[in-house]
Every structure is written in C-alpha cells, then in structure tokens.
Image 1 (spheres, rainbow, N blue to C red):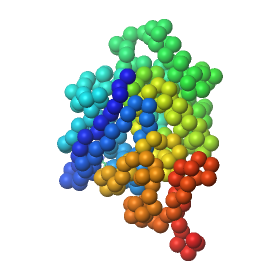
Image 2 (image 1 turned 120 degrees about the vertical axis):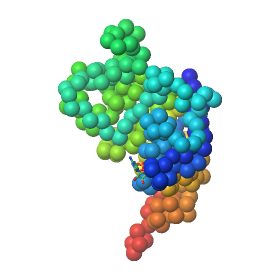
Image 3 (image 1 turned 180 degrees about the vertical axis):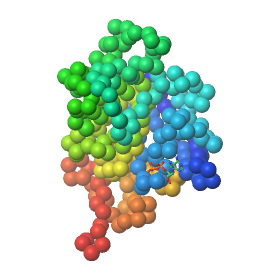
Image 4 (image 1 turned 90 degrees about the vertical axis):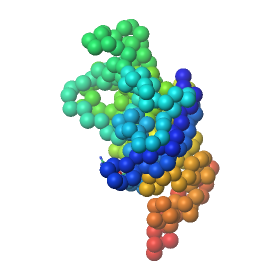
Length: 263
Ligand code: ADP
C-alpha cells in the first residue's frame, strides 16, 4: 500500500485565469484530508488535477515519491478511486453490476471476472452495507443507498487513494454521518489515503485528520481542525462573522455564523 501522497507546488489556469496557485500539501496512509473553502475556490479543480483529468502547468503529484504524470491510466485506476458528487445512472443496472465495474482496471477487454474478483466485489458490498441490496436496480435506491454503492464500487477498485467530491451533498444529515463514519473506518482499517472535498465545516472538523482551507486557488491554512478553523481566518475567507467553540460532546471546533442584527 502507498504510504504518502504529496501535492507539490501545483499551478493551474483556465485560459488566462489562474485557478490554482502554488498549492502544496501531503496526506499519509490511514488519514483523511478535508478540503474546504468557499464556492469557486478551486477545490474540484484540485481534485481533477490529482486524478489527472486536468494537467497542471507546474507542479507534481507524487505517490511514495513517484510522479504520477508518467503512470499509465490503468496503473492510475488501480491506485486511485473517485466518488463524484452525484452519479447519473440511467440504465437499469443492479447494485452488483455497478460495484463490479470497479474491477475493470484489472480486467482485459471482454475478460470475465475471476472468483477472486467476485470475492472482492462481495467484500466491498459487505463493507459498505449494501450486500442486501445486491440484486436491486440502482434507480430504485435512496440517495444514501446509492452513494454507499458508489463507495462500494470505489472499494472494489482496491484503491490506495480515495478521492471524494462532496460525497454527501444531496443527503440528509443521518445519511451524511453514516457515509463519513464509513469513510473514517475504511480509511483507518485499509490504510487508505483519503481526500474529501466538503462544505460542512463541522463535519470536516469531526471526521478529518487534517484540513486544507483554499480561497481563490491558494492554501490559506493547512493543519488540524483546531489550527485551520480560526474565527478570524474564516471571517476573512467566507466574508461572514463567526464564532468557533468546542463541540460539547466531542471537543472538536464547531463554527457558528453570526447573523447581523440577530447576535
Ligand atoms: P470549487 O470546487 O471550490 O467550487 P472549482 O474548482 O469548481 O471551485 O472552480 C474554480 C474556478 O474555476 C471557478 O472560478 C470556476 O468558475 C472556474 N472553472 C471551473 N471549471 C471551469 C472551466 N471548465 N472553464 C473555465 N473556468 C472554470
């Protein structure tokens, strides 16, 4: 398993517009990094650079010291799995069909799955608690169930790096917590390098080992939730007054927006 992912001085522009500027950070196996920041700060762009959907103008992505720019797409797909915000599935695929797609980086064209592949698919469904849904069509599932299936597909890829772009954006709070608990557990148990873009600062503080705060394509802060979620920093980045106080149950920082005239 990979021990470390390093993003080194990455720069990216769309045309003349600089979107990512000199972004550097690192994540170790078994740890979950949360990328936070206002809309348009470059979070999704950064994920796309890590997965090589976009090529940086300068800078490198290193996994255990190896520059991923020279890797084949197959090697990349065996190393990294992505869980997008929402997945459009228009055909009547069953849950099992979808999770089996995670094995494709390991199969040649038209090659059938081996027993070992089937076992990996089974385990991925078990870990995400979707085994009982295996034969159900995806179109009949709730948002939370669907997202667990997409995480199962990512696990079937046997990744070392797991990247998620607002994986709970369309979910209720109970499903949101369920997904984050699952990610937390999988990251520790499997020693994954997990990077998740998320909006909710309280969730980020509860579940991530490390936070990266982006604004206008630059790293504003990087470190523990306590280090990154400082009231002054958040006020300047988000343009609202906030108070930060420890969650009475967990001790993690919690952010409260102060509404003018009400507080
Ligand atoms: P975030 O995920 O933090 O909301 P994005 O990475 O999606 O931010 O976007 C960063 C900036 O890049 C935004 O200003 C956005 O308008 C711009 N952008 C995103 N995609 C494109 C594109 N395909 N072409 C031009 N500009 C884009």
